[in-house]
Length: 127
Image (cartoon, rainbow, N blue to C red; front, side):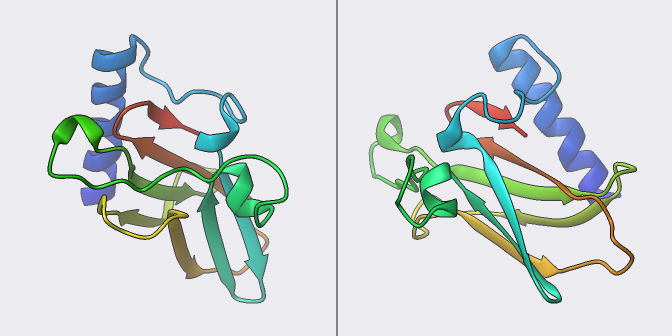
């Protein structure tokens, strides 16, 4: 119930700020792309191509907290859905956390298709 309300709020904010109710498409910004890795029963979402490639290619999204709100830039929220849109995991993050932004959760049994989403405080909702 709470996850559904949070997703609705993310959609409302994104539409108010960016004029569209849906997340920006996958890879529209590699710094804002969530990458899922699965190792056994642990799944991890990392934000930014640089995080997924360990710095070999692309940027890691910053996690910048600051006393001046104009300088704050971070990933507020990461969540993962299955192929039916059911919420598998969700995490709210804080600006002062260490980059890369991440979410770790138990890999669901049964070969579920997973899609990750995030919300950046400056650049909105991304898939």
